[in-house]
Image 1 (cartoon, rainbow over the protein chains, first blue to last red):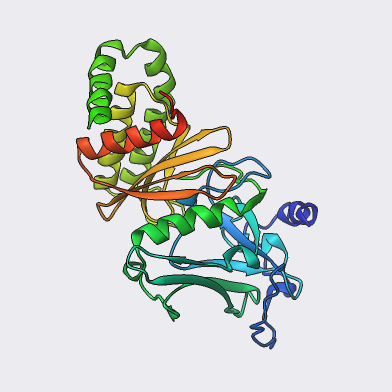
Image 2 (spheres, chains in turn purple, yellow):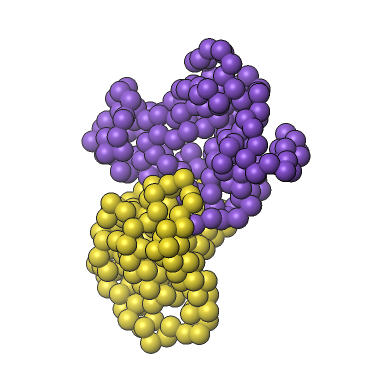
Length: 167
Length: 145
């Protein structure tokens, strides 16, 4: 798939059109994620192919990913304006766990399909506090957030390196 | 307390011993931080996260300077996805970082990257706080030091 990506990138247009496969085109939300489904995360930074990410490269409490189901290619997370960024992959089961804060509050995570007109595969990883979705960073215990970012980063694998580490 | 005392004594001793080798190894990290500072100043920020602010940049420089004093060289320094700066250490499978955020907070983490033994910790944003964080990182990598 990355090979196809390289061919696609060689297009003479600096901002190529959105591939048809990315468009929602009337497709409905699919809330079902299998544990093995792959998710793709865009990052900026200096990593080797096959390496895990670092927690400091992961956002929290929410971050965007693209799902593989319904023909989602890894490189879709780079379109349209992040062509030089890297891509890391992880499976849905990597976020299927919970953690207890020092105050004995249970935090958990799940992924939600949030299609966009030009990116059907767009999905979001959300943090839940005692079962309620956290809308703001301040709702999540700092220690829990820091541990989660590191844990999910270690479960990610770099499948495309950044072409350069931008400022 | 005994351990902390010996650690600070170590810092004082290294003030004298900080040598060319440590300076040489730390130079690329200071250079990277300077490039980030220059990029932020020139509004050349192109990442998908908030640019580090003056507070986190200053804190990152403080941490690097404390690290140079103890002669413990990080693997790298990078903007944090949360907005701020992360200074990270990788030795074999082991990993640790010290993250100074735009909010003024600082956090750290150690991980063995094998048994998922991930331990986050808060850092007081003061020289003493940075020294304690550095001590924690050094002891994580060199438990018998």
